[in-house]
Image 1: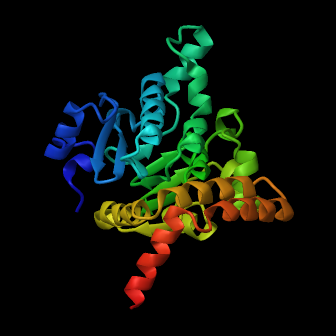
Image 2: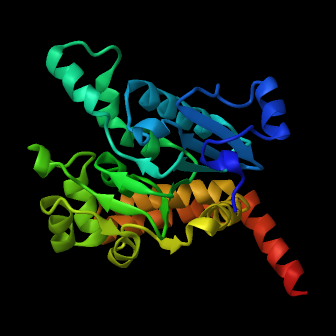
Image 3: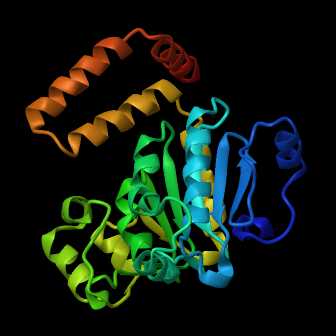
Length: 279
């Protein structure tokens, strides 16, 4: 079982507290919990009473935490999860009412652009979906590097029912990720799909029992954190470019980056380590 504070309950570790005193971690707020496990930083959406719905405060906190993790050389991988039974129920409905009445305090456009810090982050970002994901909690998933879910997780996009349409480039990203017909079913039929269906479709990488989800995802994150960071960074950049370019352009990009990677300190160190293990 994960430590209780992994889902927003209980105290952080002594290492976490010491790092906070040294000013290494971004400030923890009431709506976002931040904890380091070695080189893996876990960001927990913490509005369980609102099913972790995104208001401006949570959006700003996550945006800032992603930027700080991206700039922190000690962080190799970021994991985003939710407190309680929901990953996130999407945008807080109060935002719609505030926008309609002109009483929004803060930059509401950041909620509509939350994919930006995810895509800009220089470290792999993993979504650990431990419960219900609704609305933007689903359409933001293609912008994570990896998505893992608990068996109990569900995924629903109710925009059409609300008289709205898809966001975060979902009309571009989702058909490429799960196919055109599945995208239409997901968007036009606002009913939840279960985690196994989401896995079969390709919306999530793998599904684990809720009791072992945290440990499984943290083990994967630790594996990623052990890889040469420069190679990880440039591989992610190539995949991102490849999603939007022709095959020929993708090959040219790969060859350009490889020309600088062959013989690099990371490449030499990794090859020498591999050869020493073989001996």
